[in-house]
Structures are given as structure tokens and as C-alpha cells.
Image 1: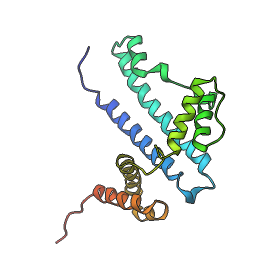
Image 2: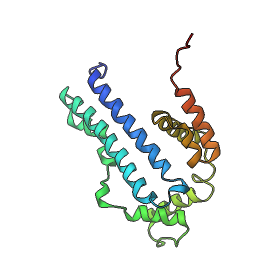
Image 3: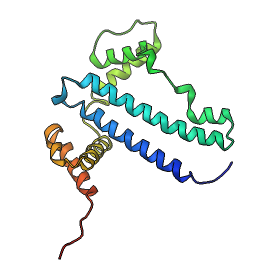
Image 4: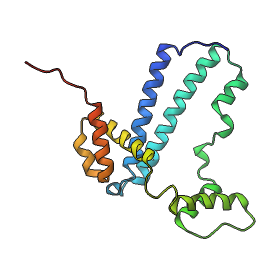
Length: 187
């Protein structure tokens, strides 16, 4: 296999697209905050799908380059993990509805449906002191980085206090501060 670096124009495009994804991810987190209750469903879905579509664009650009340089289609399909792909156009599946039922504590799926019970249990794991309980250090840091980055790019660090829990806002301020461009000293 060819062992070369990514061409600079492709690298620049991927960096731009990933930056857009990060900004959209930050907005998804932003719309989970209680003060945005009126619009959270619409905007969280729009920004999540924007992030997904933009990341798909990055994947496809890289795939087009790989194809251009002679990568076999079966290898390319393997790297693109096409067997995992699901269309959003199909909407939520029964498995997704069972997972939400587990999160919300609604009735169990039928006894004979093993996959439904497994997804229901996953949903319960989010709700019962599992993945939805106190944020772990890595998740907290990720959220703070996204919010701090957005605040720095928009030059609106003070807004962090308006919508984030205090512990996340404090860490996001530190991230934003670390991203501040030092100004030369004036004489």
C-alpha cells in the first residue's frame, strides 16, 4: 500500500469540515440546556444532522481521493464501514423506540423479543445511574472544550455563564482562556 501523506488541499478541506462538525456538535449540546426548551427538538436535530452530513462529506472526500489513487472498492467499502450505515430518512426503528422506552421507564417490550429487551436495558442504563448520571471527567472536558472553543471563536466568553451549569462554564472559560491569542506587549 502507498505510504504518502494526505495532499495539502485535501487536508485543508478535511480540517475545515471537521471544524464545522465541532461547531455543530457544540450547538447540539447548547440546545440540551434548560433555557432553550422552546426550540430544543428542532434545533438539536438540525444541528446533529448538520454535523453528521458534514462528517459524511469529509469521509466521502477522503474516499474519492483513495479511489482516485487506486484503492480497491471492497477495501474502500470496508474503511467506510458501509455495513454500519443507516439512513435517517427511514426514521427511528423499533430498537430506537425500545431504547427510549427504557430511558423513560415506560412498559417493557414483549417477552419474546430479545433485541427489544436488550435495547430497553441500554436505555435503562442511561437513566439509572449509568450513562446519564453525573458526567464523567472525559465527558465534562469534552463539553467544556466545545463550549469554550465556540465562545472564543464568537468572542463571547461572557455568554457561557448564561446557559451552562456553573462547573461546565468554569471549565469552558479556562478552555477559552487557553485559546486566547496573546497580544504583544506595548511600550
